[in-house]
Image 1 (cartoon, rainbow, N blue to C red):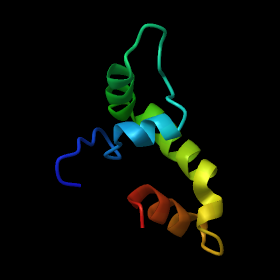
Image 2 (cartoon, helix red, strand yellow; image 1 turned 45 degrees about the vertical axis):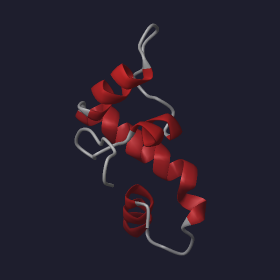
Image 3 (tube, rainbow, N blue to C red; image 1 turned 90 degrees about the vertical axis):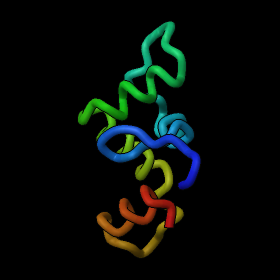
Image 4 (tube, rainbow, N blue to C red; image 1 turned 180 degrees about the horizontal axis):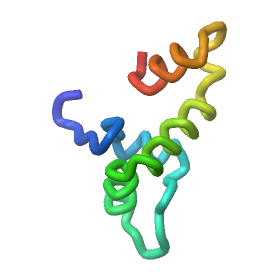
Length: 76
């Protein structure tokens, strides 16, 4: 996406981080701080991707789990 910031291991964007439940966000953290920290932490970002896929997997029926994850994560 031109002009949008993606961070970390999975190139997570802020709206994606919000959709996955904002894992690792601490009291007093701004959304920006929590998102970037999670995106740069392998375990946190992996959990975010898993939560995102679990939340939206019904939008990608009749596909194997790898294809579901790929399509949902990449927005296709």
